Image 1 (cartoon, rainbow, N blue to C red):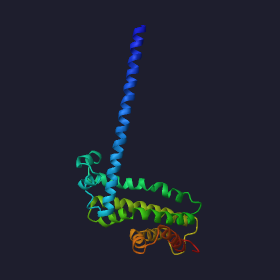
Image 2 (image 1 turned 180 degrees about the vertical axis):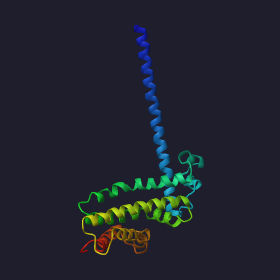
Image 3 (image 1 turned 45 degrees about the vertical axis):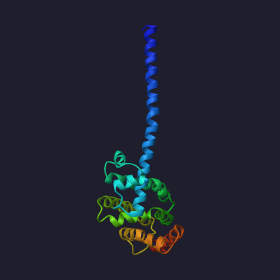
Image 4 (image 1 turned 60 degrees about the vertical axis):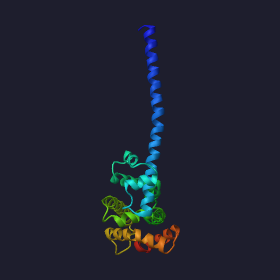
Length: 225
């Protein structure tokens, strides 16, 4: 290889490297803008669900709330079903659902886990109750809401079942309960309507609900109360 050939190849390599750097410099802000736009649309969708319900949360309404064209919405979400599905992942991420309940699974014993769950659930519901109620209310008529409600109930059931199963395995599940009946009752006690009655109708704070729900769950499901 001649010195000239080496120089040409070196220059070509530097040029290709520079082009790669330039491409990344262009692409990264573009991706950041795209993420911000997607987040703004999801935020607009959440506001619409909380204020007007699922039925009012159309692609056109989301576009209007976010101040963009309908075409812009479809650039990010192929359909309303796609938007609604992403919305609940967005809400879970914003409210840190995974992190919020991680400590429950790490609790040193089942009773502590049960009480911790009660307090964290109460705090979460104070933040997402409007969305949860809208989904539950319209699940019978809105297929997108129905799909999410089914998934939300499945997750709640699995969480509750794990808590009750741990009580049973540690030998502290109160007499008269089976794992299945206690799981079903716990599911009923944390229903949206219960949270709504205490938060909206009776004016309880999330802290009050958490403390009293912890007391209720312990006295109901734990041997010796």
